[in-house]
Length: 450
Ligand SMILES: Nc1ncnc2c1ncn2[C@@H]1O[C@H](COP(=O)(O)OP(=O)(O)OP(=O)(O)O)[C@@H](O)[C@H]1O
Ligand SMILES: [Mg+2]
Image (cartoon, rainbow, N blue to C red; front, side):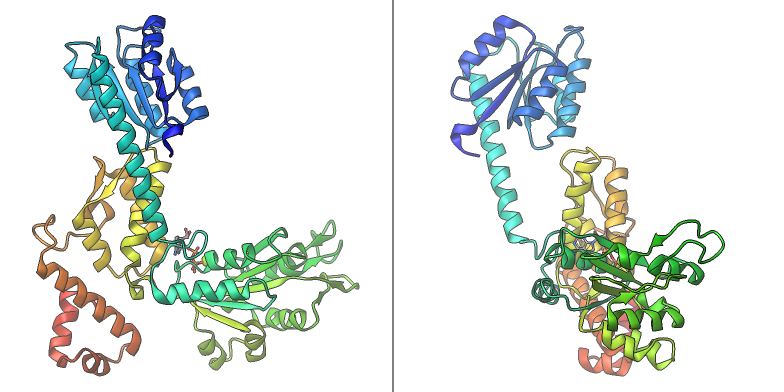
């Protein structure tokens, strides 16, 4: 915000005082409101950085209830706005109540102009510093890609790959455990492609019974089967000129694998019961948490289809193998849900961050996001502890991130990463970590890993 655009909302029901304050604050862009409703309207319209507010507002100026209600509403709408509450001379109780509700400061009435001026000026400064801080933090966390939060080098490499292949029509196969963000990448592929004005159609092959999947994908003509009362296009056709996402492709039944292969080779479909070939132009993106190579070896998945789908393969790492992402995502989710839940500014306590970093998150980002969301809703105050996110604090003295905790966390991270790399081969894990097998077992027991 620039000096020239410092806007101040004055909420005051006494017209004489309104005038006096506007005059006192002529260095700012001032707007005034005389009651709660118009204050909210002005807030939406001008987005002031600072609000001064009389607690006693109509219809009952002697009762602070209306003012306190407005204070809460302001924080719901614009959590960063600094509210300075003007209270009666001996009204410490309500001043404290207002501060408890998130007011930035208070000033007793009748106010000393100079005192109030300094209070307002300081509120602007705090607001500007916080905005600057948020801006720096956002550039630091530089979104690797819209909606994708990461600072892990492997994830950033994947973002670059997605950016490179998005403009092409190459078929992309996205692998990764549940909740790692496969759908988010599929979305990014669509949004960064020339097809972004077309439709993004996703179908979950595992969620639809085999008998329905064929008609869902390919559509049908009237009378193709009992209940086919009118011609209906399938998802493939609907995605014409857009992107078709086949989620859980590993679950596609064999007969449909053959049909999909034919579509990928010839780019035409026939609706069930139809005789006409319809050409469809879609970019296909597939996702699965299954190991498709294993499914091929078991005879469950066609190898020729695999190679059609896997023109580009993206393997999204699980959260536990990403460096620094758990804490980064947790902070971002706290900010997101604090706004969504209208809880004002909330933060994670150090014990929560330590526990989040140490946890292995088998459900990946989705599990972390749900845990944080629940914590934002359930936490009593404005800071979230380990217990609020459903985790045990990792040390007795939760506030101090002592050397032992740091070491435990580092050990656990290394252990989890190595175990993932050796695919369960413990001798190899012990060798890579440079410890004996008994030490490894001991370490695994301490980190509650099996
Ligand atoms: N890097 C990330 N930054 C921000 N949000 C993320 C990130 N990765 C995942 N999410 C969020 O986590 C949730 C799960 O992501 P998504 O649905 O893309 O996972 P998925 O791999 O498709 O899971 P599944 O295999 O269960 O279908 C979503 O709410 C998504 O917005
Ligand atoms: Mg998904």
